[in-house]
Length: 325
Image (cartoon, rainbow, N blue to C red; front, side, top):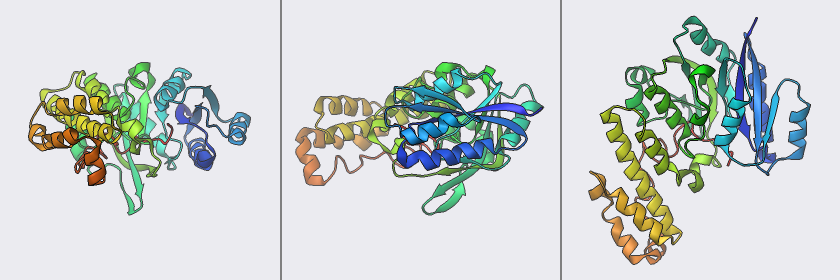
């Protein structure tokens, strides 16, 4: 008997994403060696009725509908609707490669102590295809340390043992959710296996959730949630530095929106450690001049974006976008 695997696919089922969603579903039902069931969680009000009707007619998926538009709560709803002992998550615009789930489940079936599997894959960018995890051996040696710089848990490169995962892991944060999931499972001592095999294609789109301010506004609070986990001191120190940089990014954004009280509050908290105290102190001048400084300089701050390793790999980690919200 083939092993049942549920694959949670949150989507707002919009017209522009309909073809991508169907492509993602087909990549799941076409998996060989397992019995893979897409759990498609349609959330929000921007639903294309024609695509929703197509989903409702398909006998090879499980359809879940939620009125509230939330990627995070949609993932939780998909998890709570399931019962298979193994599950995965997949964004509605990415795909599994042939054999992806069979290879991942082998690692879980071979060793009952293994709680979750992270696999490598292809990160598709305008510049070309690159491995999603550039150095798997480095990640194996230091999962938490490398997670500070790069979210190696991809929304298309995972498989979990259901008994190892609590439902609230999906919606504790409203940003950097995959980083939080990875940090939390590591902090809870859940046994992890890495597969250095290409098992998915992850696509980079300009309308990704993690590229929107509404997503990155919550990055600081998400990092705070990670800091509350049982992580080593060196990791907590690294998270604290990322937290201050996320606060600076929030202050820059709020200045651009003339939200001066919020901008000052975030800025002052961003100065509560080194080297950020020296790096961001000059931003005080922009706040003193207010929105006029923004209009003269053409943007909220010369360093308003988080540096490499933060803007893309902290607030907008690889694998942490879904184009859902």
